Image (cartoon, rainbow, N blue to C red):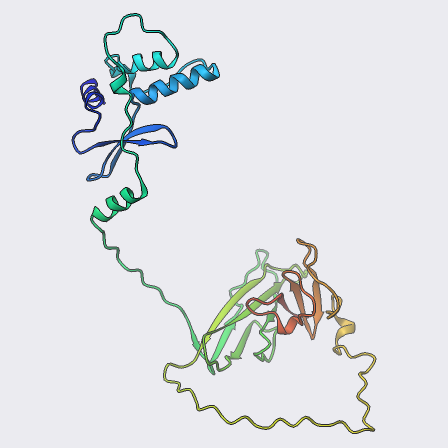
Length: 306
């Protein structure tokens, strides 16, 4: 900023050429801004330079930075000298009118400037989301899995409990999506190992099922009377001593126990075996059966069959 323009601003206590002098009272800083061109100019005014001098004198600092004093006609030099505590020996310029504050921007003023500005229309962005109609048959493939050493790979799929899969260790699985009455997400997981049993990172895939657009909601059927069978007096209803899944003895991890607290210590997420699958807890859980709580929002992650 030239000395002429600066002097004009200081004397008239306002900007020119569409610029206004603003004061940020929180930062104790002045700046120039044009609402029309949206141009912002940072600068020092006599008021801010004097404040810098007072701050430096208070803390015993070794100097003051100001700009641009090389084009100043002496007003900024006077201001910093007064801020540093120098006494006036012979007054040539009355500095008091130069120590003015600019416009302090309030929220209402900011809103007004925003309303006055020309609104710019933005082009829309296209997006495609895959959704599968319930009852459809889809295939999920792990063929894209790779190994840097080109080792032979084995696959293990984690499948939601509502869906049946013929072989959860196949490279490609085929599933029939359950029919749904509303948009429903089903989470699948793929776990890959090489011939040295080195595990891969777990890959998740969320399949979104929706009802058909033409599907008409059927009339609600009358509720059938539910008959609860009464056990025969001679029938033995006592659970067997070993009422756990048949493959417990060959499971790689301890079987899930409804009375055990899992995930109690953050950072330690236990893995359990249950009904032919391994599950890892995601947070504190007790009594949440893994195969019924491994979907979106469930406490368990299905690591696949073992």
